[in-house]
Length: 254
Image 1 (cartoon, rainbow, N blue to C red):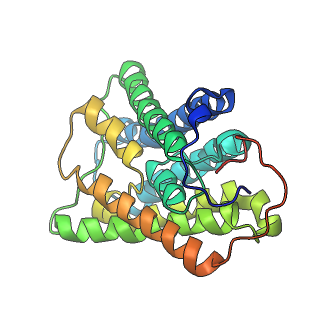
Image 2: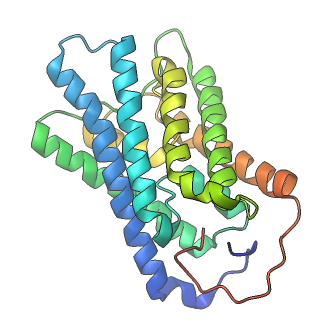
């Protein structure tokens, strides 16, 4: 695990490891969004009733949990398996990733989501459903819900993937991250869809041209992810662990 660092490294913008990590984030986000949004469209295709039912909610949560597990696991050793601008933002505020790498990740994550939704549009012939706040919930409640849900997600990422004292928990980090997303969808799905991920929300909104309440899916996750990064980094980890050897710029750079 690299130490906290906030300095901008001039060589990082063109370093091969940065390019590989960025590509990994693009592909892993594509995998996650294609399966996650695709599960919603598949249910719409099979059933005329598109209202949220317990069975539908469980199936969507399971699809997101499994696909995120696979997406994080497949890119974990290359980019850290962020697959989410809010996770990257939390890691940035905690000093676990540089600003240059964070910007690269954000661009890759957003592009991965857009490409996934474009392919879903072409293959299914259906507009991506995207996210919106349920009636009688309100934007403020939706915003607070996104903050809380994303806080839980990024806290889990920190505890299992970033914390220097995580020990053997690092091996189950992708599973834990997938499970918390699935669990949070079971909680927040009926209220606001439980995005917890600006890229996951932006691709369907752009391709499906559905912008209702879209701002909360950026503001909420970034606030929640940022709070989780700062609180875990400086209140839970507390002290920077000893760092005696040089860490290469790269795969494990989270």
